[in-house]
Image (cartoon, rainbow, N blue to C red):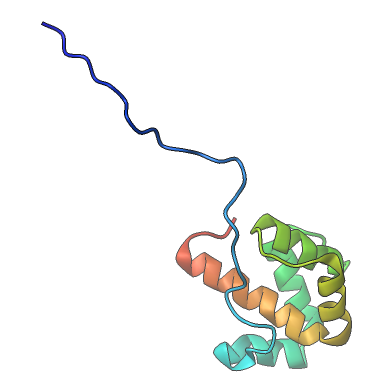
Length: 112
């Protein structure tokens, strides 16, 4: 005798990725002193590291486009205007935030 199973609940999958957030704040330099020292004393080197981590051209240097790409890749709320403000008025802090976020996502196994 065959038994019949009735599905009463079905798992829902969405094609829209779940909203994320930055792993550290823009001014959280003390959360990773090594990254901040590198950003403060060798900004181009840190820019190349971040570009390499993201498989982007390191010759272009850190930019609004790179920050926006990262933010959209991980569904971090924000705007292009906010990215522009961060990279224009706090370029070192903005770049350090990107590198800290990459490092933390790697540790958690969610960086791609």
